Length: 409
Image 1 (tube, rainbow, N blue to C red):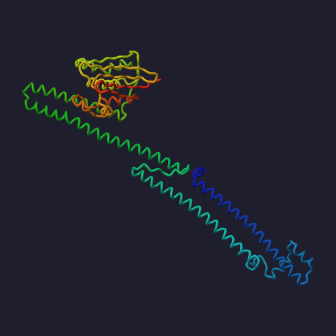
Image 2 (cartoon, rainbow, N blue to C red):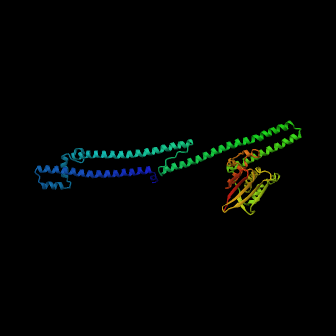
Image 3 (tube, helix red, strand yellow):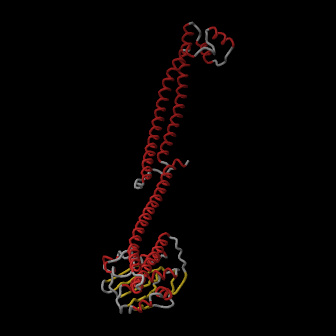
């Protein structure tokens, strides 16, 4: 009887029980009433017979004996048949029974009409309430269909119907989340295509221009060599941009599976700075590692090394010759932190919360190489492994990037 969990159905069921009880009471009432009226009818009949016999001179003793006699004889049947009283005689020809019938019929009709009115009224109220619930649910579901998930389905009870409504709301919530995710994906794709076209426009225009210069002076070795070098740089920039976009798109799509393994932090930083050490030396900049060689971290060595390399490269871009980038690490009971510190120009406060946006270039970085994907890529790699990337900076004093990983038990 799970339907009794529904408050409306429970009330209707109790009203039906009350209606059934009233029917039983009505039947009992009519049985008692019929018995009382039958008794009164017999008493009136016996009184009439006794009075008639007394008037005709029959002794009281004989009358009392006749009234108390319950045996049926053939002579009595013959006498009643002569008087027209037999089993086939219609009850309307018995005045007492006829009067009782019409009185009881009137009472029965009145009581039946009252019970029918009660039953129909109860059913109409129940069905009206159910209809209102269904109409409300239909209106809400239509709004869900239109993409408006703010309304809620009725929640007035705990029956099967409201369990169905709850399931529909859960489905609507999932659809809302999916719609939002699809909208974000479409917006991301739109923004990415816009950014790619914008970023490729400049190197493509440069390549076309370099090609025209080379085509105009094919015999001028100096011109050909000069613009060939520029062409190579533009192609490198395009390749770097495309590779970074592919990586960050794969990370967003969740198609990259990080292969975590234990490695030393010194090995991780060596992986990150392997291609940057020569650049630092040529630019008269220092890369300094400070920390225990035995400290280990469980991560994807290649991807994490690339993320840290992007942070180190960013630091090298913003320090002057003679400056340094310090790589250090420390462990607490619950966390391992990696620090990339530089003593460069720092980041302006208004740019600090924007540097992880894709293709974002602050005013102070417009003269630097890059397309603005290194820091977003580093953040995506680190967060994809359950880490956290944070930044602190003081203009004129330098910047600190902090990579934090929870200690695995």
